[in-house]
Image (cartoon, rainbow, N blue to C red; front, side, top):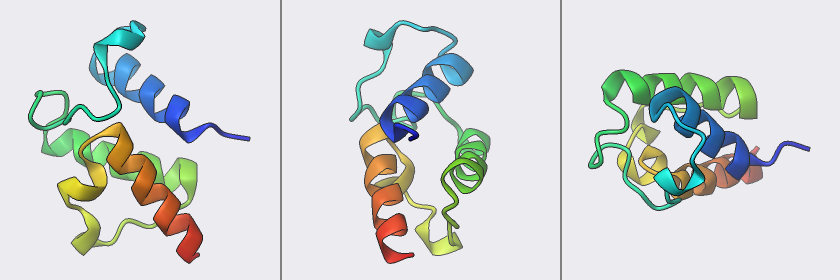
Length: 84
């Protein structure tokens, strides 16, 4: 079974922070405020969510409350999977 937290943390650490140092990212760290992701990075995360977790991200769901931290992403994935 996929561990969503580990999968998301690994993605952000390796592909955006270019490190494997777990301490470089906290689960509540804002991707936008900390400069980890820009708008293109958010779009890449959306594609990743759709491919890896089979959740469709509607246009009106593309908001920081859903996508701007590991915790926000996890909550969003859980809500989407429960609704499916």
